[in-house]
Length: 327
Image (cartoon, rainbow, N blue to C red; front, side):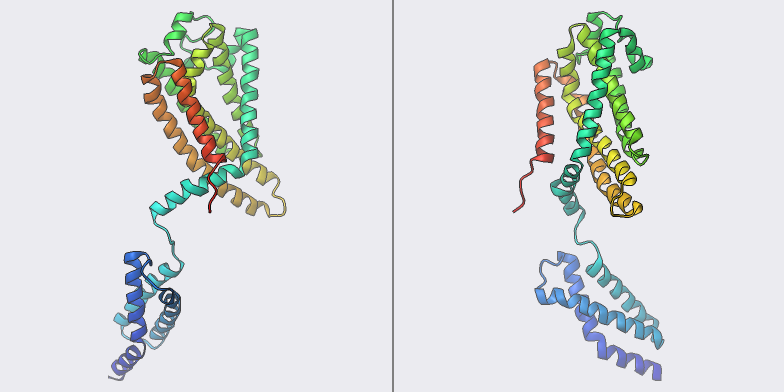
């Protein structure tokens, strides 16, 4: 009987605060706190600490189980209100596209330049070598991918692969290139921890294959047409691969040269920034896949293909490097 009276007295002395906290939590959970006044917002953490104290006392003096369970549930709800995430999934996505992804890419601008230059260097080397000696072509382009697209092919057969109504030839090359570029992007990021070397090798390899293709088609007078064929999706796809390489360089550089931070802290910080970039890279590859699967096959005019590709590139550059300043 004394335990019952003790429990009732304990409840009566503190129940008003619990009920007030419960009411505030109900309103917060329904409207995300937009309807709470400043005083009510300030009261939540105060009432939360008081409830934790009540819970501790209830457990210590062995009050009834139902009261302890009630206080545990109330304390849990208050904890997530005070310390939990303040944003919804929609708000997080909006923040990612409005600021987080853009800021992460801007922070890696030096690595992005290095990644782009490395790829371009590989392309130039392969182009020069293949134009001087077509035998080099096989060293840069796998035989399975070539499928007749080699220096010995006729101009007419090469030209067939550049137009959407020749679905078979187009699909084989397009699918291989997209799969290849996606793998390069993921590997360049994942292997960046090895002091940048694998990422640099993959960027060079990416450029070597591109340069070999350019040399092949241009040697048959199809360089301009090939440029339009690849640019309609390639500006997005190659930009994504370049950013993936930059993310790998960023991790590798911070691991090798952590500066004033410990090596682990530098790696964690670089990994978070690089992960934001890679989350966007996946989206860019998806956009490139749509352009490759639909736009390139529906649009056969070379100059319109260039227009679409260059417009996409301008859009990405504007989004990443020329943002509207926040007020």
